[in-house]
Amino acid sequence: MSVYVTLREKGLDFETVPVDLDQGQNQADDYSRLSLTQRVPTLVHNGFALSESSAISEYLEDLYPERPVYPRDPRQRARARQVQAWLRSDLMPIREERSTLVVFYGVKQGHCRRRAGGGTQADRGGAGVVAGGAEYLCGEWSIADADLAVMLNRLILNGDEVPQRLKDYAARQWQRASVREWAEKVRPAL
Image 1 (cartoon, one colour):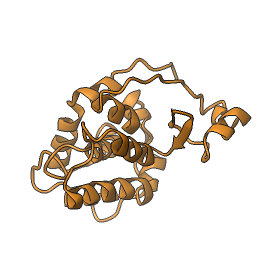
Image 2 (cartoon, helix red, strand yellow):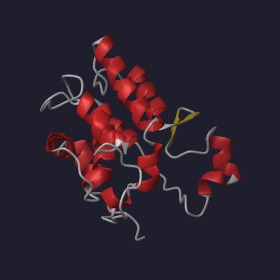
Image 3 (tube, rainbow, N blue to C red):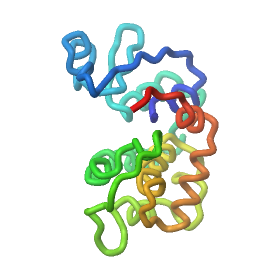
């Protein structure tokens, strides 16, 4: 979703090519030659292939800075990238127990086993990065807001306990046109 939103926010034309992960298409020889990490998404731009969502968004930001998806202020940009790194590194247990199937297909999963102290890492950490009722993480919208909203929605839409201010924050991010477009895409049946 992150790369799709970045491309839409920047107003860039692009084509999507589905890759069936259940069938292991990302491990096929042709895809392995294309994607160094065999990950989805992979962007191919002028013969250059790049995988990993945050790397792709940062690459597109460097190439097309006119319509930013990261804050222009260096400190706020660093904060946005910090949040993205945290989401992708520290929250693997939530990714494992709360797939995006709940976000994009409405498929709920059982009780989250990795809860401690009344909340998950996402809602404890999210509460720290979303100050009060802040509309955005860094004073202005960034792609990190969309990424955090997806992580929070893994919990919210599954019915897990999440503080109301984080629910409100995630709901606001979900109203952004580029995010809504991705969320409302017609997807193949499960």
